[in-house]
Length: 104
Image (cartoon, rainbow, N blue to C red; front, side, top):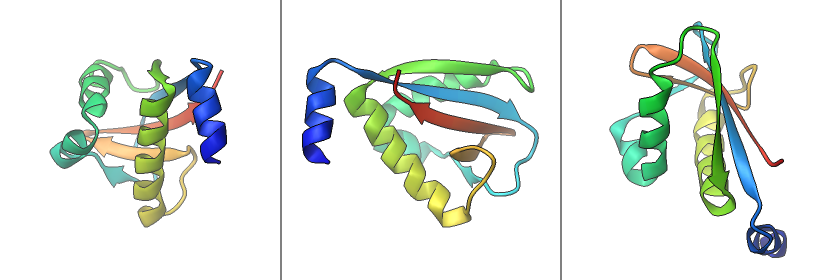
């Protein structure tokens, strides 16, 4: 697996983080300032997410290393609360979001 990550990073591939503003999902976790300290790129994304209207979605292009770090971090947090209709379901402030991570 490490070899694959090195190869993908070497080829300059990126990851896409797709996020949609939702009504309250069944299983979600909360994003906090502590999460931003763990992964500073999340703060930049979440400041932008606050502009979304309900049902609106946005995609963020991330370098492979950052995307992988965010994916692993959010996967761990989602595992603590159970599955939802998206790969990740979370609350930030007063809003709920569903998200997927993918490669082009």
